[in-house]
Image (cartoon, rainbow, N blue to C red; front, top):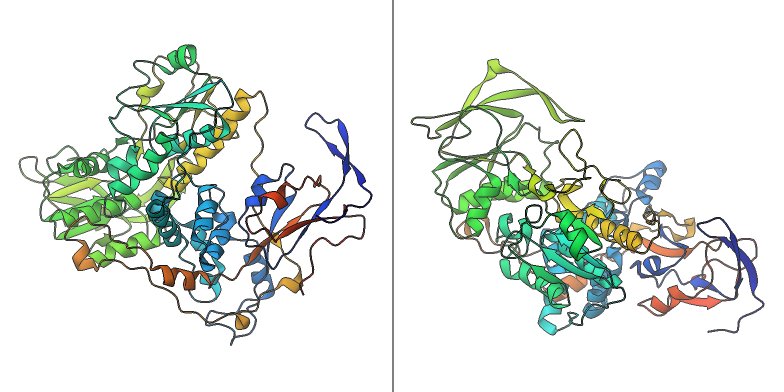
Length: 596
């Protein structure tokens, strides 16, 4: 560290409003061209002084790239987006992508696991919002395969022994009970255990995994991959108590009175539903949860030659692809949404179509018919208007255009509901008009003090990464509750535009080929339940990671910085941040190191 000149006295305001005089003895200076934007310093900064900047990408010239040109206003709007800002759990993927480009896979693993408690799982079934935000895909050729790189690094970590096996630290005497051993519950247990609490997870099932273990098909998430991520967390000191039905014996109130200081309910929405239409109870008609659970348990239900899945989300595509593997040769998915409104991700629809699933859009089922209460067809009405209202889906249909779809197997994939029994025998937990638990949206605490919820009980989005994000918010709120503090407001992740001299010109970027991700051919994939998507080649991953345009970097708000040096100490690159003479926005010290 360089010699420190005369300190500057600054004044901060604590939560109570009283000013605190501090002697600021140093200020960090950022070397922006060396920053990989991993977010480590942002998460570590005690005052929130570090923020992300995004370089603007010039797309005025038609010969710069194959994508359409952008006018200045559009370029500014795009600058307000980033892969880090899109990640629900707080990743800054640019960081580990650039470490993959350097061949520093173990360092990339450290960046991933600093945020992600189940990297093998999310390396396979994350909904990858970061890739949707990737500017390389929007402006040049294709988005960086961030999820595939995470999977590659995770597989390497388990193979090479990089996985942390040490016990969680124990700093506090309080115990937290967690109801549900699915992704939200286990992620919350990891987060709270890292903070120093004892965690006990209860689940009504004999094993962990929740809906991931029961419903996600093995061709997307092999069982051994799920088990290794979850088992790693349990082996570090989280207690798992299977075959315990919380709500009946014991109740949540019993847990609070006898065993713990706070309860997190992350029991998910494990109950499948059917639409209340004639014939819904016929033979050959199932709900998606029971159907997929039977398949995963090794007792697949008998299916016919023609199958229809009712629903338009991710579960519907999983069910349809499973039906093909069970022997149905004509599988269709029918939904009330139009093509642009379907909740399933575009890549899920493409994968299903490649395997032979056909889609019937803008159609609502009105009845299931057949002989001897055995499904043989489904009558559908065209949907003439579709909208999402406060109470769910609103649509108008045209009965004059009714048509029939032949199907001897029908599976409803139209949503799931929580098990209300979890909250039985516990007074003080209120429900809203829709039967959902009433919570404080800022803390996810119910109307009973010390009882929190996470995952699908907060918002049933059906995305694993959203469930993990919800768990992290709940863990932060529980920590604040147990320590007698106010839960901190979520850190703002929206980036700001970088100075004009940081602008990126695509014509100057290195021309690199887009690496492909290996996968089974569709005709081979439907013959069994082997994992469809393969792992990237290491050399190809390194080259593909070099396509990252390094859109983002970090800088300092010196009005918030206290000069503690935490950012320089935690920086994984080691040469990005140096401590220099103290300064505030009022003096003349530079805010960042000028590029040579």
